[in-house]
Image (cartoon, rainbow over all chains, first blue to last red; front, side, top):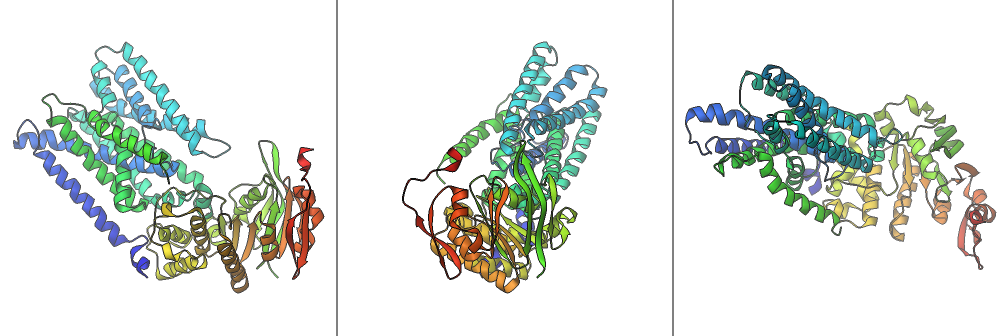
Length: 328
Length: 267
């Protein structure tokens, strides 16, 4: 009867596991607060590092959670907001905003995030429409459409860059991923808006986490277990792309967090999305805070955090690819 | 003799090709019905239509006298379980956790499984001889073991209707017999109604009360195995000559007849 005690969803076990990840995040945060080339004066800790860490928590958590959701809906371990073009769509929206509203800080603080949300949302919608076959969304066409639209929008970004002059630097930061935004009244408003959106999207996603478990059986089997498959997929797909767009507007493109984190959590805690989804958020936060600490303290010249995550993430992606092709 | 399942004039077309054509079926509670036919004859589509996964272009499916359209998804999940063919599974969990997913219609989204659910899972695993590896990851299993786990998942759902698409595929003969005997036992003890799609004509003949023979989405023959599984019917459907005998009131295919097989759809 051992399995009776071990298996199945347990609230106490989930709380214990999530608490452990929360403590990890707290530990990482404290470490990050006291790390950096500028010393440890109270002024620097509270006014420079703390807001940046909080931003890292929101961005990293969101990317990891979105990755877990996309992997669940598409039942493909290699899916994440980047591969689906969702992030690139958000970046395109943000870059168009930078070009249109350059010079008027007040307007851009409201419109750039809005345009990024719109970019992510529309990209996801476009990818969804392109991959729809007779009322359903097969994952093969969805992945292909994501890659094609992502590549197309990447090209549009390059095209826009040839016209950009003084905005070129900012566009580069969007493309490379950067958490060191300058905190002003406008950026605080932006970050608060993003946080509210992330909270709402996360709640919707968490509510549907068991449906993701059932979807892993295949859509037909999930349906026979009472899941409203198409509706659930659409809700999860759009919630995940909306929160992705929201964070891309403040951080730019930060890759691989959405890919790596859910994998590590699955290895550590298993595949139950009711644990995987919140644990991915906490672990994604921790990972990005660490990566950003590395980005701002290893070299004298700060490097974009997207570069750090890519350096560690790309080999991990290759490892996964090879494992996928391997026996078994 | 109450009715468990009925299809009335059910049609389904895909890319302007009729896959299932005006299908009328009336299955009694506690009946095991076999569905046989060539590859692509519409057997799986028919099962999907009855499961509600595909919406019929015309006609209606009803379960226990209630229209399938009028049932909510949870009610449907408590009435009918579907074993899909070559069910792919992507989440790597333990066998036990996978079978436990079968209890989802009875549990809230964040509800812990109760004793009764765990008992049901254990029972479902005993029915398919999978308890021995209940804590193993699904990815470590052979195809046959995985198929038995998927059957356990369906049994754990505890529904009065089972739709089984090729349940014995990948199973060795001992487990084929065990699984089918247990399904027959379920029908006897609980009045479970079963729709069984299989390519194994002898197995179909042995375990079913009535057989539906399909060709090109249409009902070719429908009735007791003795009447449906005749030499002529099988020759017309599959284009092969078979040596068929009757034993203990069941038709049984003994072997292929000598001589070259002419396939009628090639002519």
